[in-house]
Structure formats: structure tokens, C-alpha cells
Image (cartoon, rainbow, N blue to C red):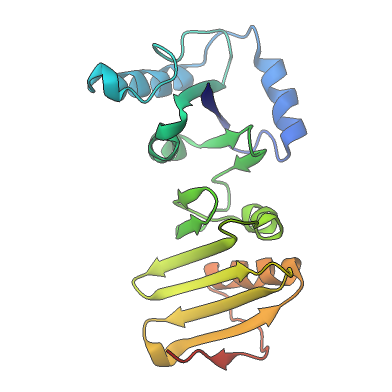
Amino acid sequence: MNYDHVLLPSGVASTPGEVDDYLAGQQGVAEAGVVAELAAELNKRNGELPEEDSFLGTESVGGAATGTALQVSCPYDAIGFVRKLLFDIATPRGYAVYDPQLAWLIDPADRVAVTVTHGGAGEFPYLTKALVEQWVPELAEPNPYLIVERGPQVYIQTYRDPSGVYTVEHRDGAPDKHFGTTIEDPAEVAALIWAWAAGDQLPDIAWSRVEF
């Protein structure tokens, strides 16, 4: 059984339903040049590896009448590697990554270049307002946390405890610049994380210094 990702142009959809409609409309359409480029790069990278290290769930990708969309399947143990590779080659070409298993549309439009660690899904190279608004309410066991980093020891993070309360902390490079608070409303947590990521001033809430 494989894990699927789908590449599609940035901005053509904003919800899973719109993604499904867009993909249905691309069926039978001749493969776009940019899709051929994406497929060729993936096939090349895969071909450079020994067969036992293949990261594709099929012999190759591309070459089908899917218009401006490209489906990429991979073994479960290659999900993290493949997702990173897809961002590396798709983002510069203005392409979004859709995860149909999680119903996540990761679109680079209006992105902020930060390192995001999602406790349930690994690392991502950017954050958008839409993503943080989706991810924060969905944080769940066994790893209900989200970390957004600008650099070493410069980050904001949240952890959702079993009662649904979020602990939010931000750090600006040193222990004496590490503060935290607790918030119950996931929308408020998402807004706080997005404000920090976007470089906006954080709201004046009850921050307390975190002691180690």
C-alpha cells in the first residue's frame, strides 16, 4: 500500500473539495510541460538510487493525460523524504502539494519561509495562514505539538494537552527571552503563531517567563 501526494498549480483550489473538482477537470487533458519537468526530475532522482532504495511507489511518474496535475505515490517509509523532495522541486515552479490522506493543501501562495515541525507529520519549509488555522485545531495525540522556527533558539511553539488547553511559548535566542502562556481557543493560538511567523507584534497577553 502506498502513500499519495498530488502536485497542482498554486491558487487553483483552496479546499479539498475544490482540489477534487480541479483534478477531475484535468483528467484526459494532455500533460502540461511543467508537469513533464516535475516528473522527469522525480524519475531522474529515483533512477540514481539502487532499486531497493526506490522512493516511488510506481516504476515512474508522469506521462499520463492529467493536465497540470501530477500524482506521486511512495512507500510509507519514504513519506518524509518524498515530501521534502516535492517541496524542493515544486515550490520554485509555483506548485502546491496536496495530501489526500490528511486533506491538507499546502500551497506556497503568501507563504512565510520558516521551518515548521508538525508533531504528527514532520517538517515543512514554510507556513501560511491557512495552514496554521487548519493545523492548530487538529493537533492530537500522540504528538500534539507545532513548532515554528526562524533560526537557532528563535521560535514559537504550542502543545495541546489532553484537556484541550494549549501551552504556547516563544523564545528569542536566550533563556531570559523565553516566555509562555496558556490559551483555550485554538483560533487565538493560530492567530498568535501566524502573527509571530509574519513578523507582526505579538498581542499584549499574560506572558510569563519560562524558567529552566
